[in-house]
Amino acid sequence: MNDEILTRIAQALERLSPPRPALPDLAAADGFVWHVEPDRLEPVARISRVDLSLLVGVDRARDILLENTQQFARGLPANNVLLWGARGMGKSSLVKAVHAAVNEQLGTLKLVEIQREDLPSIGRLLNLLRGAEGRFILFCDDLSFDQDDSHYKSLKAVLDGGIEGRPDNVLFYATSNRRHLMPRDMIENERSSAINPSEAVEEKVSLSDRFGLWLGFHPCSQDDYLAMIRGYCDAYGVKIDDATLRAEAIEWQQTRGARSGRVAWQYFTDLAGRQGVRL
Image (cartoon, rainbow, N blue to C red; front, top):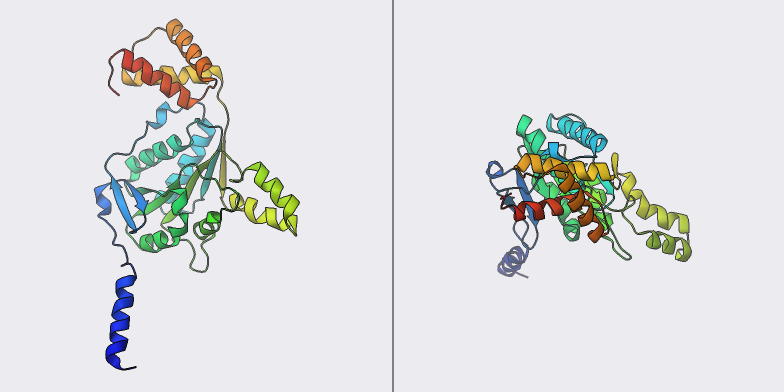
């Protein structure tokens, strides 16, 4: 095989392999979304979030996450965090609100959202961010895994770092309704069908153990639910007396069959719309 044929083969292989993605202008935004095919970081002009002061009933989780994030932004040791628990109780809202609060103080922190289905590409994202200017929180919302789902293996790269180690300028925050990220029936199925049940289960549930911090979220009380709505009303200038708010808000929660921060915001959105208040 002569040199000309070897050169043509090499050029063909180069055309087939995707080029290494370039970092965007990191000063252009505080948040980015990771996309694949092709790999790229898309800036988010305006992150959808509420102010940290409006999050009611999550004081302990707020304080711990805020302190951990401040440590990381200052270049100090910090933990990956799993926020787990009841639906609609502000897990993702807290991550975005804490990022805004810390960034307002220090201005060096970027929030990078990655979808669960894109976790197999996380190694490429880490290589892109390794050595980049600034510090990055990788954020995966509603993280969970089902039967025959091997995406959780990709996540170990960012949590444990592998042979290269996790970049010092990257931290991983995830939210989930499940503490162990796996449905209970999947864990029970592993116990009943595996050759070595304990090892099969351990491989999957140990993933959550790789998060240094677990922050639990639980259903809110009625007082907290009403306090959330009152806080939104005061912040956005919506006028309503306490008796009317209580009656309407309780009726709203009863029609939804649930009480949570999300339901509180949905009632408030309806109330603001009826009063012609823009959010």
